Length: 51
Length: 375
Image (cartoon, rainbow over the protein chains, first blue to last red):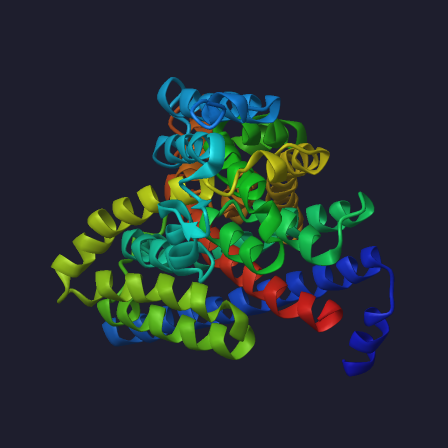
């Protein structure tokens, strides 16, 4: 990961933007994915309690 | 004698043009009702700050009231944070708890941020400015202000105006993009409604855990996520009804009023009247188009893997932007136009509140990643 960042530091602005875009989109999907797991688990626990 | 008429003698054509721009913003607010709570104060602030001598900003070394408000509310990011507390108190995540899959559209529709950032770098903007322009695509005024204030303070005026103007134009921007990317058959897909109600403990736990997860994954997003979720916790706790109402009403209105006029004060002629402003306004529009396209195309991609009875109406993808609840209403209206009685409002709202989460996480990602590369 550190080597990717080091390489991007010396890349053109557009390549840096591409790196930020990829990292950003992965980060947003991963974070919201964790929120999804949280809600999914909560719904499962809630359903189990009702049963 | 010249000093007596200095108000007249110091008028320039740029000032006159800014009065015109301020007047147009006020006209849009009053006549067209486009985000009137923000565009009206922004328009008036733009006129105020461009009056001769600009006394409202600074005169003879003393700060004027708009500079005091700017330093106390924008430069230190206080106003956007307070707005987030108010917005958090207004959000009901219950529809999302019933349709958790919709959360991924809140991520997909952030495509506009990153695509626009890339485009801005092709047009010659540096990475920090490009990121600030891209954030217009968050369709989220406070996030746009927050990021622009950190990365591109000189462009705060045009970025804020673009963000709020295009948010109010969502009913005009989204439908043609959606129609271009979907068939009528796809737009008439019905979606089953989940009737289960979310338990109270989940509603209380959600803002706390979300803040903590955001803090672990994207620490830079914590001021945004934390204030939004603090407002939501006040709402959902059930024991702070008065605080919740205060956040939703008095706090929201008061800060919006001050935020608008202070943003307007950043629109001085020398900073606003240039080629870059036109580019920013153009790219802001594209950011909203890319957002919509990103959400719709992601829904179509997901549909490739879903059985026929579980397919998603791809219009839902377009609701993954943060313009809440306008986007959800637009999509429900379109669904009803294509097939009377097709109700997808709850799913649309689920995607729409996810967009609020997605936009601030995206803002946090940009704030974290860009300095790693350019300091």
